[in-house]
Length: 555
Ligand code: GLN
Figure 1 (spheres, rainbow, N blue to C red):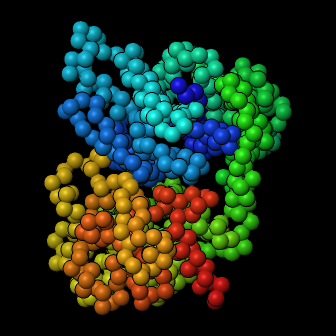
Figure 2: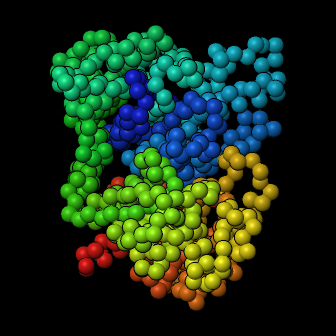
């Protein structure tokens, strides 16, 4: 049975608990252990696929599919998980199964459906023990699934979303309390991540919010073993001793998580403070010598020491929140770092692009354009306009999913003269429906988990740019869509230089397009960003960044 590390948060949400969790995983991986990561999300949505990206950021799409079958009457699949899974996969460099994202929605649904089936006959169904039992059961299922894999699992790290004290998180914390009690003393560990603000006026680190948050945790019967303090600067000795005293933990188990130039450095920052040694000692695991750390340090340095600067415009409707396109931002950063370039991504409000006279001048300032994934009509005319400007001005251009669909719409409208051509998602009465629902989507009305999701095999056509990029005839990337490009207009667009460069394995669904008479212009129906890693950039992002850089250096 693997050991369990639970990671809770206090004081505030959004202080980087996901990065902390991923960094702990990375440290244990350096020590040669097999790790799996779990995220508990206390909201009632069954999965985050239906959440507005402005509230929670984009969901992450996993390679595999989770078949959730709490009762014969409810079958449901998902590959849409919390965006922290993107952080996890980027840090540990491997795929994680979507069953590892446990939401309150899934837990309650499961218990209520089982009640209807008569599983608890005669009993009052309650949060304790029924909901908490279901949560513990889910932890054990993940442990069991891990045992079957290769060398088996050594440690499962469970991050609890939200902060201690949230009403909806209470059943999860109670389940963790019971779980710790049922397991041996050295089988579980609790890490609490808090914020230690620096008061500018006095230049002092304030530990009181942490003290309060630990008190709250203690009142739930949970004693933290390790405190990780998020702060602008590293903790002073005085501050960490104070936290240790009030939290009933050893002072070496109070770890700083200061602002860093580069977030991928966090595991190394923790290593300097002996975090992995403390974890291994508490869990009574052998402290194997770390390996792979130097290579990781080099990767981190490549992010810090860049020579070039690239500016990329991302026209879209979500300009308010950085997390909306976090996987794309990271994929561009990975590619940039690999090539010695710092990539700055600028969100361009596509609703504004629709109205302004100088849209072309605005876009010409950038080294390239990335047209984002998306749903719904708002701001799409501006995105189509941006795609057409890119075609006319021959700007390096990458369109992802929706972005590829809108590139195709622009080409059909302005190069092939199909007036008001559109995707039926945006205009159901368009005279030229050049992007339309996937055949299997026509019957579907429910919105949760019903898109074409997860990893699929892709066939790449010979002698295309995409083939030169991947150097393979068959690849696997991840998808999240209901609509696809139509073949007839795609064939008609061949005379304008359009090449269908990839399809699904049946040859029916267009998976990528490119313009052979342009410098670098590709649209992918798949999302290459989900497989990009800091030490292994995705080939499409790498080629796009290289193209932008190539042109810039030549100029
Ligand atoms: N809305 C489009 C579709 O469903 C694009 C989705 C996306 O960009 N992920 O096909």
